[in-house]
Length: 74
Picture 1: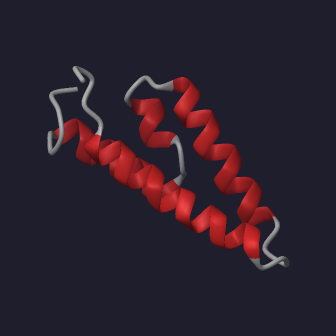
Picture 2: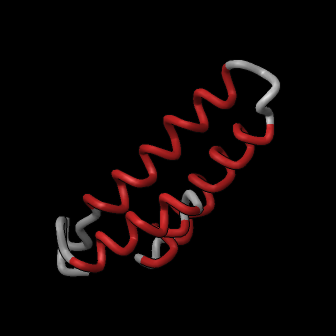
Picture 3: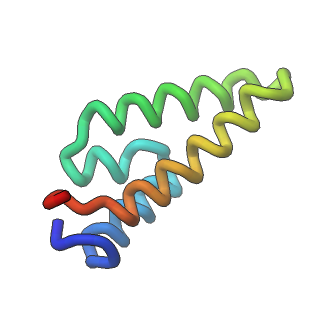
């Protein structure tokens, strides 16, 4: 990836909007993708409780921002 704001990061962020962790997977970051997916999908699955969906929503937003701001040469 070229860096923050690059076309690849925009595509990765859009992927993360539809499925959390997919943007990280597009960027080649398997562990981050798995962690974001498990936390977010698990929290959304527990929709009938109050706190897990809130945590999942925050993690989902974090996954989108993380995919958009990722820079491979840090």
